[in-house]
Image (tube, rainbow, N blue to C red; front, side, top):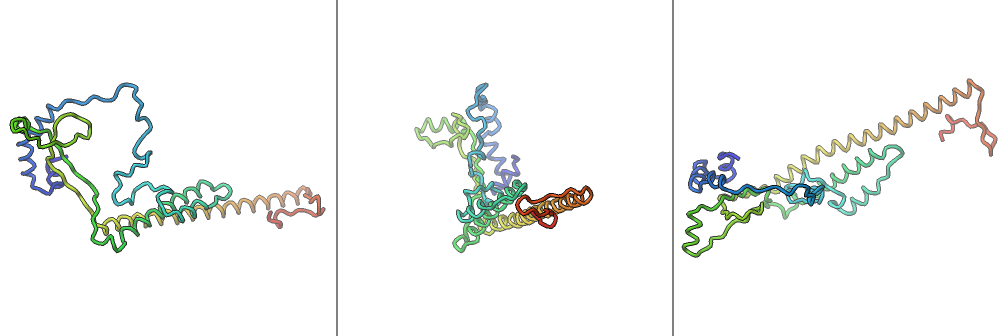
Length: 245
């Protein structure tokens, strides 16, 4: 992250960031910081586990791009979507349509939440920028001489070095901003749903056409060969083309 980016995130001039960098000797302290070793060879404690697989939603902001599951939507809508029955050989298409409908119901719930009267004027935290730097030797010596511990920032990586907060910025968005993002994603999703429904209809029409062609072929074959199929019970000639079964 550059000084310009840090200044923009903190809402202060670039010169102030440069001053902090110089006073606190960021580069020197970073070079002196001990290098952390990686995990032991062959360690598989975290193999195959990711926040996504565990359903971790800590990074979710407005929710428009979140991965939605059947458990994230209204139970009635979930039951209706789950009850959708696949037909013949289009199970995959139907499953894809179910997934799209689940996501649609999830986004509609979010949109209702952000457009509710009680959400008016509300702000939601989208991002927290927290920059911590090592305490200087002068600061550590001053704490030791005065006997006053000014506290320290916890190292997210588990290090033992004493850190202090150099900058903390919370970036927020309004309910209106979030609603606009969710609505934009909903509009894109509607297009995908319509396209999927059209694909299913086209597949079914093609399946009917092929079935009709097959019956026509069998009838033509009967006429050419004189070969007929007789119903054992009624002793009537079976005409697949006319029967439609």
